[in-house]
Amino acid sequence: MAKPILVANWKNHPKSLREAGIILKGLGRSAPLYKRLATFIAVPFPYLDLVLTKARRFASVASQNMAPVLQGTHTGVVTPDILKSFGTKLTILGHSELRALGETDAAVSEKVRMAIRSGILPLVCVGERAVEEDGSHFEFVRQQLKASLAGLRKADANRLMIAYEPIWAIGKHASDALKPENLSESIIFIRKVLVEIFGRTLAEKVPILYGGSVEPAGVEALWKVGKVQGFLVGHASLRPNDFKAIAQALLSK
Ligand code: PGA
Image 1 (cartoon, protein in one colour):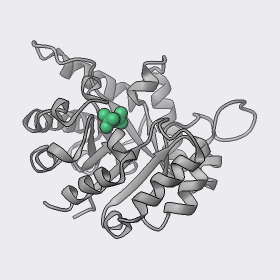
Image 2: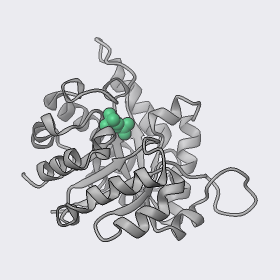
Image 3: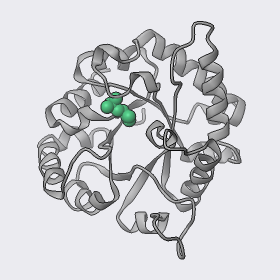
Image 4: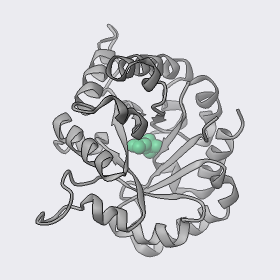
């Protein structure tokens, strides 16, 4: 079986290189654990080099965004060729916090295609703002996913990961995370949409992660019941003990 996937999303929390270094040092104490997983640390661009030098023995470097252009005359963005020179293996794309600033599905899909073309694994985030009683949030997720993956070829299913992050569950506490049985329902739905896009065989290969208040409390049930291949962890990834406990849960199945 493929290794469970664990992605730390630091957002913009560490306020300095020094603070980032302290967190990495803490994470490094559990290096053997992270090596048993596919572990990625997604950081603001100025910290990429630090992750590359301090954490590469146990985790891969990841970014939280990427320009949809390859290289050259583009002021103010960071292109895939530069990201790759810092060892970046994965990029989070279409995170709800960027979508909230105006990023469209079309912009996300352009970046997804460019990431695949550049050999960087896109982790494409989708998720509804709120749960609707009539179930219409499922349709929202279907459309967002299809639009975010527009223009991909079938074979691209091998170079892609999805993160299901309901916006209402982000940045809270374990008790506010999605309930495990609701998670498995949503993941089955997302898998069905992937089948519509890629066909059954290839759709089965796309890892789907869950993100939204993943904390040590509750993570085991989400992992055992949720039908996900791993987690995208925000605030708990900044606390080495919490991140370690989440990693341990991923190895418990
Ligand atoms: P959270 O963030 O774990 O702090 O809820 C998850 C995310 O936004 O990726």
